[in-house]
Amino acid sequence: MAGGIGSVVRAHWKRFVWMWAFPVMFFASIFVPVSARYPTLFLFAIDFPVLLLCGYMASKPVRDREITLGQAFLLIYLVPFLIWVVLIFGLFGLGALLNAIAK
Image (cartoon, rainbow, N blue to C red; front, side, top):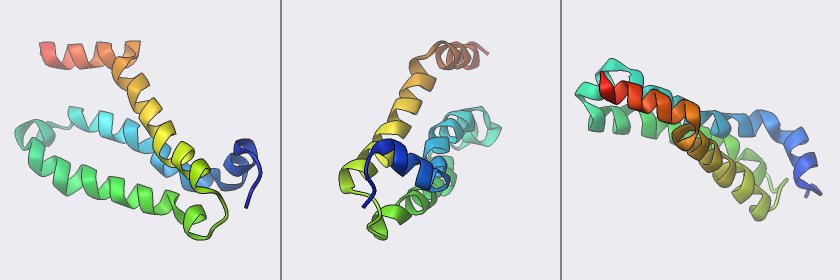
């Protein structure tokens, strides 16, 4: 098992980057025209399988017991949630969302 969060990130960043990129991909999917026409279908046919694939790829160090469950929770669940919060409630996210609603 690895020591600190920094060493875990340096050793396994290629696995975690998939889960860290998912909130950006999920936020960008609201601008795809088909998602406005069929939002439930798009969510379950595109977004949800991509989330599962990203989670599976990011969980490889946990499955190999190279990191602890606490480190996994922080890097696989908490960091993507914080990225999503920044996108939605940040200036860019809020401005883009309001612009999309106004059109």
